[in-house]
Image 1 (cartoon, rainbow, N blue to C red):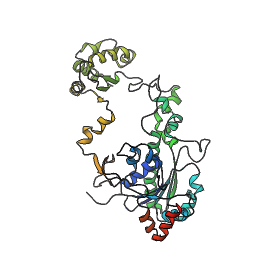
Image 2: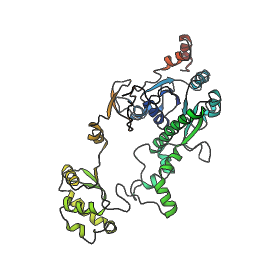
Image 3: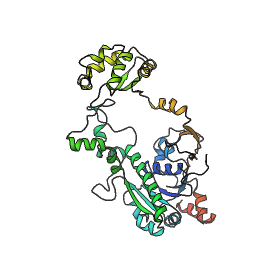
Image 4: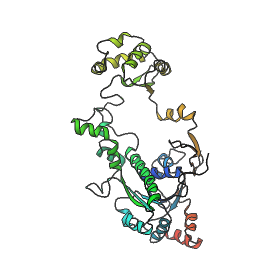
Length: 395
């Protein structure tokens, strides 16, 4: 494999916190970019305190902050402006997801920083964007999921639900990442940087495309069906006798016939007038599901999966997180790789894109301010000046 990574030589300065911006910058770091993460002295990114489950560290934080350098800096301190200006002059990308209006108040807005460095790509990640009636609204992930309609189509008709991951944050992080890559490519042709805005709300609304258009032009939203489907049966989770949950997704008549012959061991079910067509199966879904549950109760999960494989029927095992961690598709392909942290080595997943000839960077997760002295020295501060900055609480 080549030792060079596609983004080596790119420097990113990030005033980031929580999930959206850190998720974008970690992906840049994976590909070789130098990411300088600005954190509050002592406490750091507040995501460090979300939980203590990874050997005393936050699961959120370790997931999206490997391969970065941490500079502890109080952005409100008088000395901070000069330090940030020095960093930005040499940076390719500046990204921030501070509170609405905070970047401008701190002198970190797009107009000022791009005057300082015309090649700079300035990225702002916010909850709802820089204009509009919601521009200053709190934008925690669950709130954006609610405003963007994701909660309205997730869960069951009786119990709507948010997703179990930070979907709005992740969506915004992905669009920030792809937007930065696009801007870097465009800069190669034009020589000029640009300003990018990404909001959690716009990102998640984009992902809501199917139910949004379905509802706008069809008049009603898709039904909330849990793991089931709003128009197809059998589709959803069925429990085996040993408690294993198997998810079926039978969407054509060939699979349906094979399912009845091999898994249900009753070919007559396929021609039963209640179940002989897709529309009939859905109309009699309760009876069909009762029949399948009764049959699955006599199988273990492994037995049921073997029959489904033999019948070439679309299915999956509904796994919990501990099972996913040991998923054979991850284990056999060595997707878990060692990464160092302030409290010792842990295993982390490789990025999902496999690129020929490229070995992803899997460098340590930093401690708060771990690189402060080295970065300040790089910017020309003397040991005496650094000591004074520490004395005043600027770093």
